[in-house]
Amino acid sequence: MFKRLAKWGFEIDLYTARLKDGWPPREEIDGINVIRSPKTYGNFITKDGFRDISQVLEFTMWVLMRLMRDREYDLIEANHCPILPAMISWIRSKLGKTPVTMTFHEVWHAEWYRYVPRLIYAPIGILLERALARLPDVSIAVSEFTARRLVELLGMKDSWIVVIPNGVDLKFIERVRVGRERQKIVYVGRLNPHKKVEWLLDAFKMLKAEFPEAKLEIIGDGPMRMKYVSYAERIGVRDVFFRGAVSDEEIVRSLKSSYVYVLPSIREGQSITTLEAMASGTPQVVVEADGSGAARLVAESWSGICVKPNPRAICEGIKRLMLDEEAWRAMSLNGYAYVSRMDWDNVAERHRELYESLARR
Image (cartoon, rainbow, N blue to C red):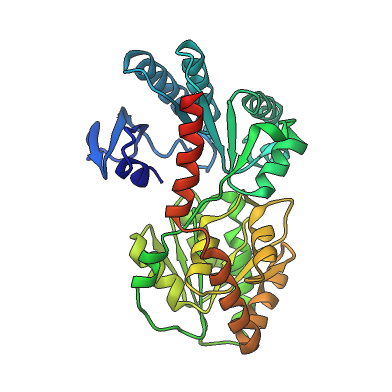
């Protein structure tokens, strides 16, 4: 989205964390001034998959120092997570009388109790999230599902929220040509605890009893990767390929060559990979959970199957798509029709209208 705004004449400074030692502290990428932290961080995640608070605090102080020292801005846009850097952005916006927008990709609320290493931290997380929801001039929710949770769970007013979805690069996806493999299943995403990839591995083992030629690709990296690899070995499931982090083109090739995309995650504000699966013509199996906007997305688009959050239900959902060619074709067409209005060009245009109106104000 920022790439497109830069082409339209916006000057954009992007403050972000350095994740690799080889990345320079400052460079221009597609017209965006990317400014990275001096220190290299490990995605702010501990080896157990939890948020590393000490790293977040370090990064927050660096953001504050840079925002206080660098030039004045017409508008500040902050990602809602991690929470502390977003709060610092709000402080800077008040000092400079600059409007601030925050993009909320999801709402955690009770999910804090599943995420934190010690339950005593969960109420603190909930309080900080509720406080953050009261700070921006405008909150950008990536889905109606997230917008509703902001109001119902965090007490945000409807008038503070603008819904602008995430998008897909339709032209890029359409350029990738690859054949479809009838018994190939794919997962794309971070390997974090709430993604519940172990359910998918259990479901795939059940599926192999009836579809011995089936294979599963797991694309993505994260703190749970080696645990999932070990789990797959322990339950003795074959034909599972952990590909790690791959290029955008490889993601699209895998989505377009697969017959079914599976997202067992119990917490998604919207799910960009589900949109990319739709754009690739690949029906989806997603689980129904209170914190999953992906299930609402699939139900609304009629592009896949929503199932109960357990391995047996996931297995049955995959089987239905593999056995019912007519339903598979209908869901493939439904998904593409739904996502065709969510190209990043359209999404960026909606951001431009919002940002320009706030800057004029």
